[in-house]
Image (cartoon, rainbow, N blue to C red; front, side, top):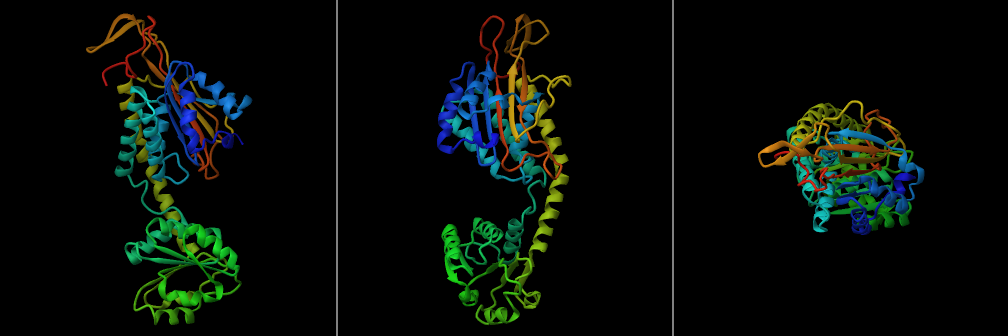
Length: 414
């Protein structure tokens, strides 16, 4: 797919960034490349000059022209939405904020940024922090694994010293255990009817495997059991729990049943110090959290609108014209954002410390153009990009009519 062709491995980022910056008319570049997206931000006089390079390196062919444009403030708005977690599959997720900061830091270290992208990205990071601290966009777990972590932390407090056991080596079990590990669970025990699969999963998670018929003996030392076998009957019964509790000295036991049909007898949840949740409980919690986050979107967008106005004033970005831009094409969830300077229509001007004065033609005015390929709205109708979306962005800088380069991104005091 086009998205897959555009993927840039971490080791290739410096090379690709340098090559993009070497294109005629490109002076600054930030390349963001993650498993979820590829975005290129460039500043210079000729943004289109990067297209032949991208075409030759990634084999875009005629698809390079299947783009749509954002004009005016929309390119800045896109970056602000990205760092705020509004452009992610999971609303409010924080990982992208760190990924963008890392990409920007690498570009700085390589000497690939200057005033244009420095000002834009630094402002974007302030926006991302403001959105997250002023709204509830990242409150509440939005996945089964996240809900399990929330419950586990309520039961045990810190998970630093907890041990997790997986019954059945299914994908959801693995992901839930990884969520617990990410919050400090110290060890993982894996039991599966196919011992080789248990060994494989245990190695992947840095844990240990046990034979399936030995799992009851392990319950005395574990804190969380995630059960997801394909058994047609209950795997964990009240007798198992009763025997384990006698040797646990009052320590709570958290049982997570994500199997269909159920692996754990509901009667197990009736014991003191035993907390039983099934996948419906966890998914219900996640769904409620997602709904709450959706309600926060308007508050987030209002903050971003204000910040776009602020950066527009600072960087002298003219407002978007309704006659410009629009969707030209949408395919493969590839987004490609551009911005370029263009001569203003108000005649002769010059920029001094005192402001904008009329005396000569002036081309420091900015407009952003976003070119984008996209598969359109998600199945949920939100229009947010999927986890595997790829995007690219370009910011370009022009020159005065007298051939002198502009003195930075802003056309007025910043």
